[in-house]
Length: 329
Image 1 (cartoon, rainbow, N blue to C red):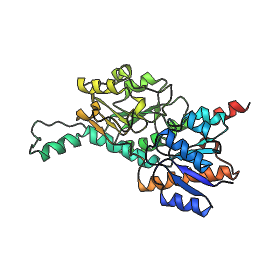
Image 2 (cartoon, rainbow, N blue to C red):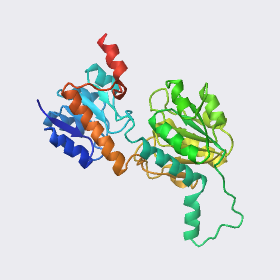
Image 3 (cartoon, helix red, strand yellow):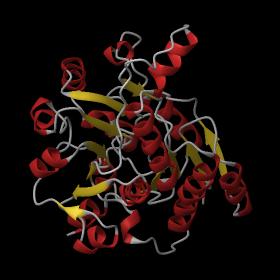
Image 4 (cartoon, rainbow, N blue to C red):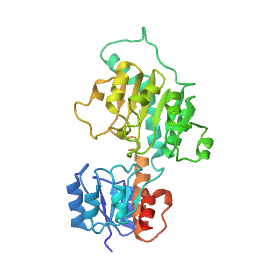
C-alpha cells in the first residue's frame, strides 16, 4: 500500500511528523495556500492516499481527480474548504480533530474580547504618539455583562468557562446540542437565535460555515443586539456580512469587534476593517499555538493512519458521516 500523506501546507508539528515516520508513512507538502491545480497535480504525481488539509481548498475537481485518495483529515475542525459531498460520493471520509485546539482558540477569543472592550490598540497607539488620554476616558467593565455563544461545541464551551471567570453571564444557541451541554457549562439555552442576539452584550461565534450559516450575522441580526455591543469571531469569516459589521461599528450601534477570520483570506490590502480602530483583527491564528499544533497534528495524521489500517474511528470525528451513510443506502 502506498503510505504517502499529502499535507496542504509547508509544515507539520514535529510530534505528528515523528508519529508518521514511526508507523512507516511519509509526508509530502504543498506551499502555503497552494491553488487547486498544485494540490491536484501533487496528489496525482505522488499517489497520496491521505490528505491533511491545512491551507488551500479541496474542491470536487481535486477530490475526483485523486484516484488513490482514501481519506481526508482536517488540521482542525472547520471543513468549509473541503467539498464534503464530493468526498462522500467517492466514499472518502473527512475527519476532524474535534477539541484538539479548543483551549488555544478559546484563549484567543477572550484575548480579542479584552483587547476590543478595553480599547488596548487605540490607547497603546495614542500613548506611543505622545497623547496621555486619561482625562475624559471612560472604559467598560465586563463583570455582569452577558456573552452569547452561537454554537456549543468544544471551543464555545472552553470560551464560556473562561468568560465565567471574568464574571460574564452565559447564554447560548445551538439546535444540534443536547440539553446537558448547556447545563454542565452553566449556559442558559435560547429557544431561538433572535433571543440570542437580543440578549448578547457580547456575541461570540462558534458555529461551522455552511449554506445555512453564511452571513448569519447580517444587518438584521446586528440590529437585534443591544446598543454598544461587541462581536468576537474565531470561527469562520463567512459567518459575518462584513459590510454590515463595518456599518454597525461606524454608526455606534456596535462598540467594536474582535475578529480572527475573514470572508476571504488573506484579506485585500484595502479591506475596510483596516480603517476601523474599534475592530481588532488577527490573521486566523487562534489555534496556532505550539501545544494545539501538536495535538491537532497528531490527531490529524493518526486518524488517517488508523482508518487506512482498518481501525475504528469515533463517529463524531467523521465530518461527512451522514452523507456517507445516506449515499450507502
